[in-house]
Length: 168
Ligand SMILES: [Zn+2]
Image (tube, rainbow, N blue to C red; front, side, top):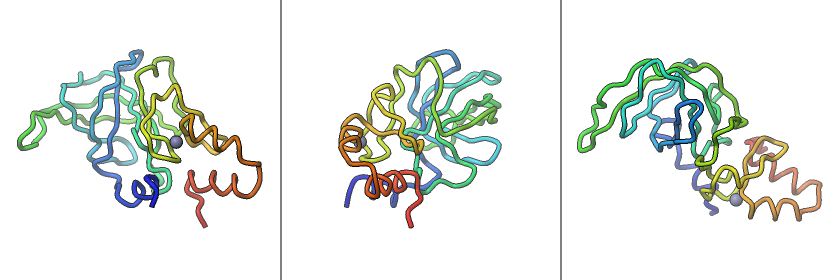
């Protein structure tokens, strides 16, 4: 079983790793999404986040295959509230945000410190080293090299379809 298929089977929509940064900064902080809805999400993090501020949130290993209709790879959001989280044994802050925009293509000028997991092999890589495929998957340099070496055609199309969840 590949790392990728293990990841698909063992990950749900709650408790997914995310990274956030204030807009116009590259200071991405690891945190953990606990809940998500159409209009916003709740995540927990070690540092308080200023209410009313704008943040960029990126899912660290976006579960393309299992994606629910209202989930995306990245979001721009306004912080609605921040409070101590009821987490025994750890000092965490709970943050509620309201989405301003969302999408599956990561955009922005401050992505130097963002990391993502490769949609094909699952390895964590700096975002700026990754390649966006025509099917809107992000793959690492290693996988890109192997994908590029494949003749275009049925096998390559199948891999692309697998990455974006169109598995028949
Ligand atoms: Zn890869």
